[in-house]
Length: 208
Image (cartoon, rainbow, N blue to C red; front, top):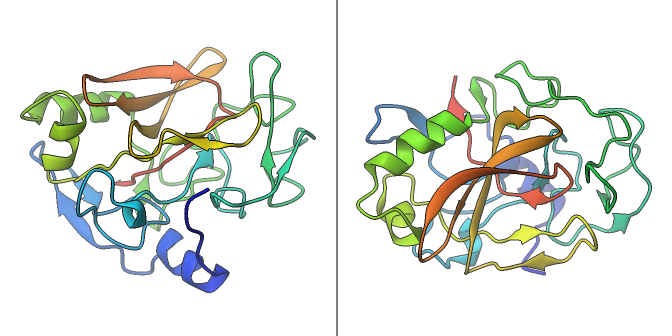
């Protein structure tokens, strides 16, 4: 699993008091890096820019660290009992026993992990960004003002981090039935689609 930071450093980059902003070609204001990243991406495969991998709807409780321990015990409430990444294999592959689609809705969302005044983007907002990219793939994602790197993801079934440097995976606040939507891109394509909420995925915050 790729590099983890000490807890103090993680807290600073996860919830910075003065997040650095960047304006995209859509005119929207975003954070200039992923939550947990120590720098803006210098390339698509810049490991220091990958950041954390959150399970959809969870707060910054420690589970998002790429090196966090795992457990198979599902959480009973939105506030997980510990800082472990929760493995889930049965439909709908959520880390919560009882699903809750309101956890990441808006800047005042119950478990919004973004700094004050920021929130998770919607699927539509990421689709608007894709439309401005020179190419609809990983190259376009990095060359855009957001400089989105190939973060990879963390498997909901065994907690292993995979495809870092090959795929870019980013959560949105949008939900579809029992799933949540995210941005996915690789060297050939870029689009939003829906997946299980137990997967660990990167977060890029947008200003409210």
